[in-house]
Length: 250
Image (cartoon, rainbow, N blue to C red):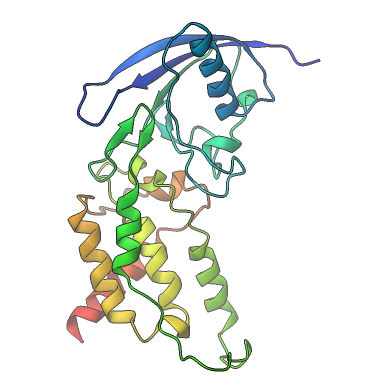
């Protein structure tokens, strides 16, 4: 039988984007090592509702490490202490009875706080939208094998395509840069022939939009790669820079 744990949570509470926030400390006396961190927040919220208090707002959807919406900063680390793991897949067995965990939202100018641990990540959607579409010829679908793509390119494109847009890279970066996210999206398409027609306009528009959103510049700290739940390499950023320079000089 699993022993229960007493966990203390120091949670950032903020009623809205314009209000001042502060940390509140709570005790969860019946935590279980097999719970995920989000289940721990569920238990806390049940306690708060019973006490007639406002539950902690946090973002989540799939709870399977796929969608990326669950991201929070735990003890100063985006998504918490376990590498290549989204917050929803982090289990309480990584903590000890009596531990205090500091829980904060992603903090970046480009991600305004909506409430408590929930931030507005629409900036990522706008960066994607700035990239435009991949143009296709209408008519009969082309045979999938008609365009030969070297396997190393296809594999690398798939590695970059693994990005789930969670924003941990921004939260971990001392400059709050969105370069890993944007670089992954640009690199994925630049490696494939389908991405070629809009290649130049895509990189210019996405990089410009990233700057407009208030994200900082990359200065190669590599904190983004360290916290990425999909382990995306910072080589995506170097590739994005090369694509950008090429597009601007051609």
